[in-house]
Length: 264
Image (tube, rainbow, N blue to C red):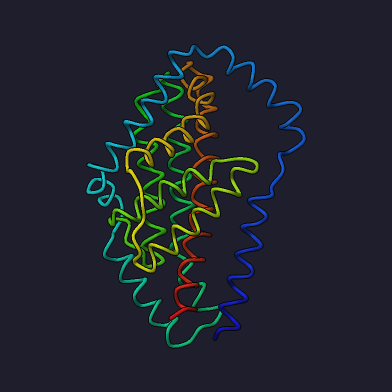
């Protein structure tokens, strides 16, 4: 049993290291980034500030009042029941088949929500709309993470879990050495939460970190997306961002889940 779990966790650690050590594509670095920088240089400071505030307020609204709305978009009880059944199978017999059953729902959520966010981004962009879709995009990000967390038996309604989710989003969008540093902090946070230890946090600061990361990652795309016809590019960016976050979330939650079983 322990051998299978350790092998799975070792595999996840390799995948995680690959994500953390991933170097920027040469074409993107040499050709695309200079163009992006030119676009960013033309973005008015007032618009950048407006986007930062829009992402921050979007997170606050969705986190505080949007959970019930998000839960109407999937069958929470069904996901929990599926997890309970699959978890029971895991407890009885740990093998590749039982682990795949646990993974199944998480993979499905990732694909579906990434596709929806692409359509949402492209359509709104073509209409020349930029800011109004930000809360909708945040809804899709949180919907994906919520479904993944439920699939692995974690309760996203807990205040501490919301802090974890916000930090997870931040780490997923970071680049370079900071990503590695913040990822270690994320793991420490997970350990404390899973051991029911107290964690120190100011929710407003956590929201600000996550919203700033997302705003920075989307600012150029949203600027382009506000221009009619060219806005279809925004849909592609939506897909890239939500796919990056959801893949990272699935990896981290699976690792937490398997680690909990191993330590029981």
